[in-house]
Image 1 (spheres, rainbow, N blue to C red):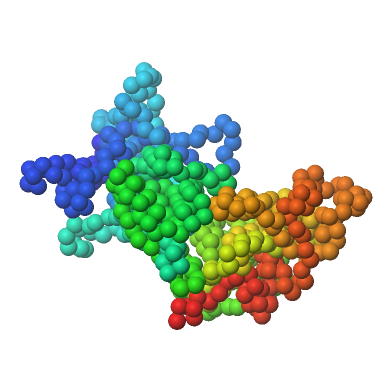
Image 2 (cartoon, rainbow, N blue to C red):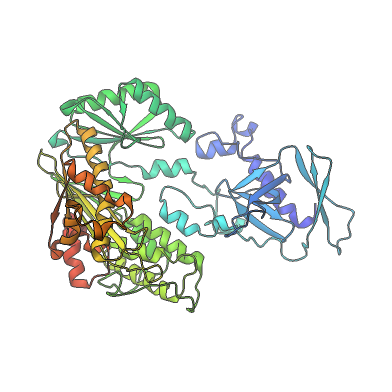
Length: 576
């Protein structure tokens, strides 16, 4: 092995020694003594073996290689990504997307002169052929070039708050700190971020979370699902991650996410009994009432629940150096028209996609950002300075609305579901397609919303509204069936508000055949829903159309009014 790679060998040796038992610690490993649990060793491979890293270059052709042979140099510090050396390009690379070839190793040609180019020979135990790859290693081989799978660590870290980034560690010398460095594993981060949310106990409704001890998540989740079925729970047909047991006052709902269970119901006694049953089957932790989950902050009050992502929003602004920017009143300037801008000045596409990924996760509690973020998301392939300006405008708006979120108030016993459907006309300058927007409410609480470009071109505003209403009808039927299954009550018609009288007439009266015969057959589905009484379509004035902010950029004053109608509130004042 060339001498410049001995440091990698020492690094890997130290990594292994920290995970091997030693007499000084009573046959325990240093890792176990420091972390309090046994190390996981399934990811370790033989140093110097063949590793095939996934080729993530965009626009690959059919016959292009999907992977590249490399040399395995150990594990990246602080994560389980692999350090690889690419002899063809003379670069170190860090990647998780790696496949290893068993019973194989790299043979380093020690007979070559140091001034010459050394040869690396791949010895394949399953094939007698030898593949020789020549590479120049005279330049600085220690310069790490992350693969494309790790080229957007900010997006990975921010879009999934519970998942650590594998490329954010700072390189320091041994003298730069005192004592050993403790890295958090994925299991540790899960344990720290799942603090829990619940509903007011005074109303005899409790929402708790139970978490299993970190193990193999997929196997544990499967076992938990089987145990729920054995305890009499039934999987919800409309949402497979939800399980139900009992009816009305004795009903218990369980939401399953990986190895975590969110439990809610009216009977505290029933919930305690369920927890005891699960704890006899699994080693679980009762985390109490839900207050924080996957980046979403939950505040419990007497008659309402508040959801927001203020901490996550601050992290986004800090990550992209916008923490001290000037705030603005709207995320996108009115009448802004984006297009591909083929002649514009290109910008860093990786950074642009990273910002988009972070903002999209923020939409879980910020429907007022749906349209602007959705529009910016359409140009991730080749962004220019025009698109970058829009992104900065969104971040400036986020700066002034960090504490905005959704408020869910306690409603009447009678359940009502209603929604709003809206559309613009040919807002996409490249394909001349329209944008659909919809928002659905459960007893005046916003539970579902969407802003999306339509699949086909509309010939008129009536046709665009008609297609948007059909898409909303599909969502309405799903919500109707889901609520009926969870509450064990007969489903009631969903009221859908549309602000276009021509579109309403087209939905209710098939006489207008000449104006609609060219529309795709699937969009006529809403007529059948109206005839069966599943959906009731009503007219609403444009000024009261709550989905208006999901289809176009609005001025600051109108946006504030529509934001209020949509259900977005400044939760900082609510908490004060």
